[in-house]
Length: 258
Image (tube, rainbow, N blue to C red; front, side, top):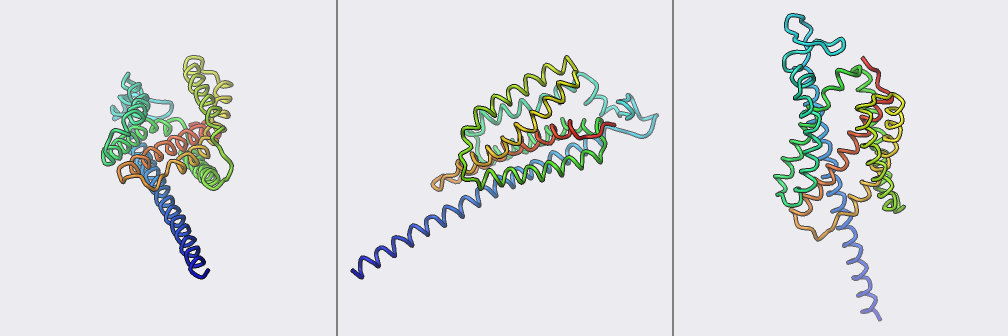
């Protein structure tokens, strides 16, 4: 009987030890995802600020164009006014498709580099928001987005509720937002822009929680270092896109225009 009790005790310790190892591995994996996402956001922010500073001037003689009340340098004119602006706008989208289809076939180092390049292109594309909105409102909305994203992601990570049924609904909503945004490029309707922005905040808030839970469930203790690394980068890409789009939707609602 004593022998059976000892075996039972050893078995319980083994199960507890395995659970502890899984929890430790999961925490390390999620921390890696958030670190990648944060580095991507830092690259995007620095690129946006750097491009903006090179694009504007306060000296009339150095300006070649004007965007609203802002004087543009030749560099700024090339990015924001010339036909090259379409390449600047759509380059991040092309990079997203590239990463989505090719990431699993890339090395971890190659996937990291591709993600950093994508973050850089996104920063170049987003630099135009400094021409449209006041810098104070951009900073304010960024901190609102960071607080909201953190709370939603934490809830998605800790909740026991299965968020998988949200997936199809959120995906359909995302497609609807994309189509409506493309249509509004030609309509330029302020009412439609307001509706899209409100819907976008709800969709990307839901996606933040849904993607966090989905990324958490992607973790598998038996993954190789390569597989775990690629999963972490893919997860970082998903959360990065949720953050950026939530920020842009909130900026359209609450940002003060120049």
